[in-house]
Image (cartoon, rainbow, N blue to C red):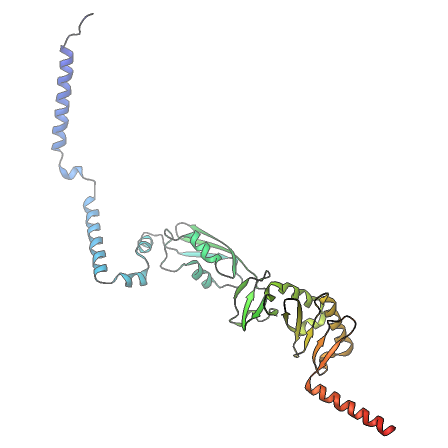
Length: 300
């Protein structure tokens, strides 16, 4: 087998060595300024100034002041480069105000869109009693969209001396601290919030008497006692209370019972109506009976 001549191999080796030597010499010959990234001096200067300003702010005790005035540093930086929250669109509100929604979502002028947590804002909104569902979206470069489904105020619930606004399922929406919901029906007593729908249905059976029913108290969790606007109590039976309410409407239509000196009407028995007079009514009734007795005695 023929052995290849060594000449070309040596030539290739010599050429390779010369190429490597040239490469090393050319690399060493490039000036250091040309091998560094462009504008690195500017960036280093900016970093130095930023570190100096940051350390001076911390050491000088001004960091808290900056946070109070401009928010957290990462939010400040994001707003500086154009990612602030410039617009918030809110849909689905009826009882809540826009300010209440923004506060609940944690959005203010110091918040940036980049570091705004939409999912956390949704959880905060849904923790508000008046909000049943919430959807929050970030729309770059500077908008937040909020869509809400509120719990509709259904009735007022008074228990242990406190007054609450409740939803149809009895969920407490908020404390009653203003007159916005004064027009809502009122139920009183433990667990009355869970059965407010029954009271609303009874009012519907009362016809024209409904406007005179001011509230209903759930007694022992079994039956309702209605409070009329003239102070009269109407005791309803545990079973078939709707029929008793219709009887009440008939008594008013036929005998104008609201014009009488009555303290309470007991409709718990289907075959009779028991009425309790006020003190003035009882005194007048006693005088009337006395006069009748005297008249009969004189005739005798």
